[in-house]
Image 1 (cartoon, helix red, strand yellow):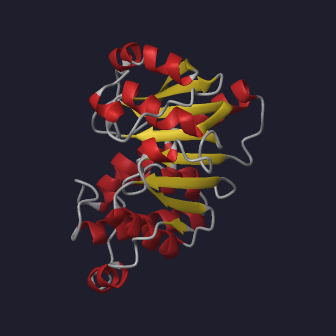
Image 2: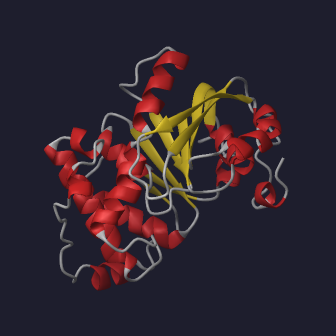
Length: 270
């Protein structure tokens, strides 16, 4: 389902220009063949991932979705990196929330090209995954991707996190919010935590050393009604080295004044 009133204008134009290319070739280079998280997926899920990557690179020729141009590099830097947050996410939810991970309602804030949201939705078809993205062209791409991979558990919502966080349809409705490559922690928590239910989790995918970001986000976390739960190292093939998952617990309701007006969290971080 796509929640936007402005997406019809270019759907056919994009489809016409971006479906006439050659299929992407996935080589069996050792670094791809041994991607540990990808190898745990079923054959159908692997096929869906390949379709997603092929579509991403095809559309990327016409619009800026990723700086990565090769399929194997997308697998390493984006797909495997997205899958890498699943183990700490699931472990933390089971241990802290005291509930099964069999059926979760997850939101990917600032999903961009669908990372990590599309990948997580493929890997966990029993979850309901909402992709939040403010740019219209990216939403058109995401809608097309969902139709190509045949996923029925993905909803696309066009809008800014600051506005959607004040919308009763989304405010404190999600078990988990995730964000990858969106903003620094003190800004991210204001984007994401108003969307998370009390007792749920917010997970930020970060680089090898997020300590400074976490320290700066302490005040923002407190104001959003949350606390730092743990910082987990994750197994990743990222060329930038070790990756981490910063996991925060939503302890109490977020005050109604948060999130602030669009643009304010980035200009005036708490």
